[in-house]
Amino acid sequence: MNHMLLAIDQGTTSSRAILFSIDGRIIDIRQKELTLRYPQNGWVEQDANDIWQDCLWAARQVITGHPGSEKAIAGIGITNQRETTIVWNRHTGEPVYNAIVWQDRRTAAQCAALKQQGHETAIAAKTGLLLDPYFSATKIAWILDNVEGARHAAKRGDLAFGTVDCFLLWKLTGGRVHATDATNASRTMLFNIKTQSWDDDLLALFNIPRGLLPDVHDNVHNFGQSAADLLGKSYTIGGMAGDQQAALIGQACFEPGMVKSTYGTGCFALMNIGRDCRLSQSRLLTTQAYRFQGQSHYAIEGSIFVAGAAIQWLRDGLCLFTQAAQSEDLARKVADSNGVYFVPAFTGLGAPYWNPHARAAILGLTRESTAAHITRAALEAQAYQTRDLMDAMEADTGTRPEIIRADGGLVHNGFVCQFIADMLDTPLDIPQITETTAWGAACLAGLQSGIYQGLEDITARWQHARRYTPTMPADRREQLYRGWQTAIRSVIAGNH
Ligand code: ADP
Image (cartoon, rainbow, N blue to C red):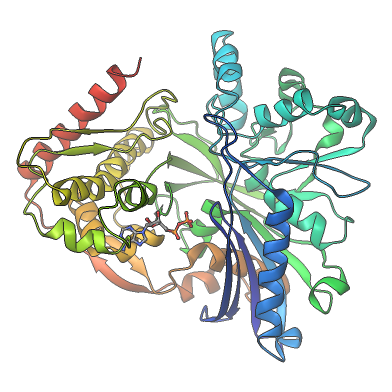
């Protein structure tokens, strides 16, 4: 009797394996922190072999830690940090360069030049994305142009490109399968989300040989069998999705208008917009939400690069506390931020501003300002940033969500959750299954194996653990938000 699902959740800061029961209970979880390297200003890399070895280690640990699980695991689902780019040799499986992480800005000049040449509109029409170093295309081209012999090897067909899901699949299948799923493909800036195919014009524009690219499948698909020697026996890899899309699935946001917002290192809010691929007019992204049985569903996405990372900076950079959770008590020591605003643009501003040159700032300081005010301002910024996204989403879709389903490390902070509900004037639901990203990947594998019959089975398993209801008076809300808008304007003006 199969009654477990194994999720591999490869994130920016850690690689994890989670064994789920079919009702979503975590049976076991193993995790390894992943090192980020910053070889030059604006560059962010990881060792691709570490990514693989850590995932393999974590998967082995949960399996061997649960005798009998070999028989019980119905399939493996993979979810991953998106856009991060790996190019490897097809014959040896060796990466030709480190993984270039999504946060990496080394290709900002190329993106600016392409924008200058007027390519942004055509790219957005096909991919739903904006011209930004965030996406994979310019990262692939950088590897081909800067690693000796890489472009030549790529033309000969010796190299393979993949996002992290694709690289893990290749490794798990012993180099037999080179494939990705539609959500991960949609973040490369080479994939036409309307025609669901790699786009020859974009490949020519970015100078990337087609032979480098993987096959693209539905999110629920028999992607391949893991090599038997890796995990003790062979398992079916039955589902893959990028992390934010996996969270949308894990949060069961299957109806148009439903929104999930994940507060981890960054914050990513996705609104399901259904089967109609509408482009954002408000500088948000249009992206693949999921593809089941060949049918594409789309989402509008707001991506904020720094959310919880700002709390980490208060902890590690300013040493205001030793654990992120202590930020809550500190913030509650004061009644308000006393006019202090914290714009956490450490790596530029993402949606809806898209300003790679902006830098973080703490504004409105007076002699009365304390660590508590600054911490409170950093926590409040989570809500202001979400409000920016929700206003843009409303402008795009004409709808404001009735409820927001939130997840990620920051939702353990009750102050943040209440302030978000207040600033959006919208209730915030926290689910019982808080590992929504990994759970989403497990659900895909469960659908593929037949454990779940359809999306209604996923919906039936979603339950809220806690609801935060707005209580802030409207005039106070708008007054606070106007202060944030002024802070954002001065950050943008100061960085031109
Ligand atoms: P990721 O998956 O992006 O690595 P997580 O979802 O694990 O991130 O969330 C971790 C982030 O959340 C960290 O940046 C941390 O600073 C922040 N965080 C975690 N718990 C709290 C808390 N109680 N209060 C404030 N921030 C928190």
